[in-house]
View 1 (cartoon, rainbow, N blue to C red):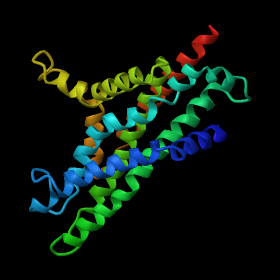
View 2 (spheres, rainbow, N blue to C red; view 1 turned 135 degrees about the vertical axis):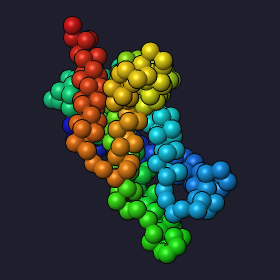
View 3 (cartoon, rainbow, N blue to C red; view 1 turned 45 degrees about the vertical axis):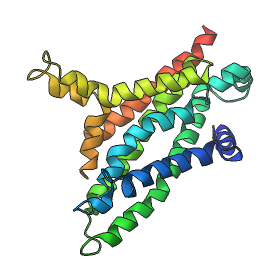
View 4 (tube, helix red, strand yellow; view 1 turned 90 degrees about the vertical axis):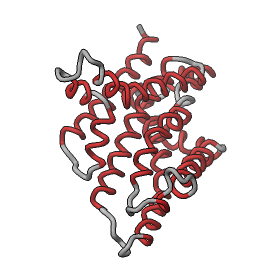
Length: 243
């Protein structure tokens, strides 16, 4: 598994993929936070990073599928997936190696955003007037969100050998699991009945809970369950060739 992880990381940074992903994320977030007047923290009356944590899921919905779309689809298209299976690694190790490599790349993209925290910290009046606990919880929630989206992206990549199809499918599934359940819960047939239960099935409910700085065990269990669910589906898709 570790060799596959290193191979994927090297492929990201030996080409433009890794640099482009990190650059696009930082440029878009920088524009949102400091340039566009409707979102800029410079026009806000409060020192916070709410713009970062509210916009990041939307950006991740397209950025993460762009990272994961090649992980298994390219292997199937090139026929190298069969070569991988002849090596002394299980299907689960192949999946986890690629999964961890994609997640690591996304985390690398998040690390430079600490500069945004420092900027807001310095601009606060008085300096340092920030809710650091909520910001820390939001970062943890964002990592869990990214981990869930990566699992969805890997699953979509396993379903097809076409990278564009994998990208579109992953983006759609990320949208459904993040905002779809919230939209469904607002339907008249659910409002006042089981709307809260439907909302709890979506990623947004648990992400928002973590963004308040409260690390609830139920939210952590939800994300681990969602990740394990899509990893298991991916494993089933890979093993169907043996059936």
